[in-house]
Image (tube, rainbow, N blue to C red; front, side, top):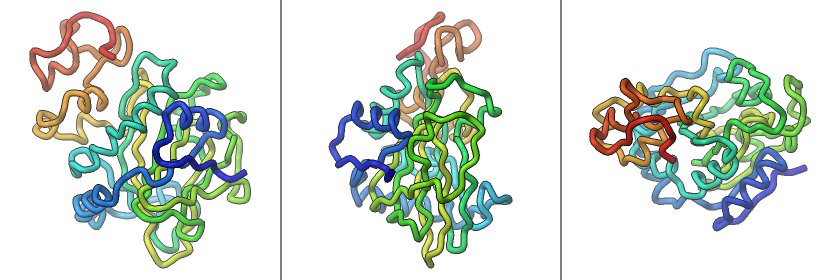
Length: 276
């Protein structure tokens, strides 16, 4: 079954419902061209300097460039995109709070082999989460067209409802074909992987993901974003990055102080309790 598409302007309830049903959905033509051009310009020096991956999973023809908040002010607009945030908060609404999990530009180069099919939630030490308990809501924003030929992400549609530790091959998957500026939403439980790039061009996407705030982040935002940069960021972005309580008694600093006090002294609350 192909991956469902929604038009720009789709609401978060519709997007979240399709993620829950199929594990993935594409929303077409969300990011404006001017924003994409700024992001490409800001990231280009870092993309060019990033080495290719050291193994088959990370991709020996693939460059993975992180720390997007620190390196690209324009990427912060996608991190805080209203549709992405409202969808993630809806999809992960069973948890007290959510946080930014990962920011990464993924450039799949010509000749890249298909990535092994996997679940992103396996990053949590392969913990067997209860069936139906979702811990991640993920996005991949297309900075180039995604085609079957150039390595579009491949998804086993509906596999979010299947058992853990299954094995799938490329024939079990559907390509997330979408135009530049579109965004693929997918769950941490759906089986997927980067496609093989049989074209002469690089496939570039931005992987921005969110997870329930009682779990550790894949990308350590406190170290990826230097203190001097963090001090310039809006409070709502800082809280999303993790300067917030993860749940009732998770993440406070010293004498039960609000984590935001580390970079915004005087605005936080004291004691236990989440701030969302």
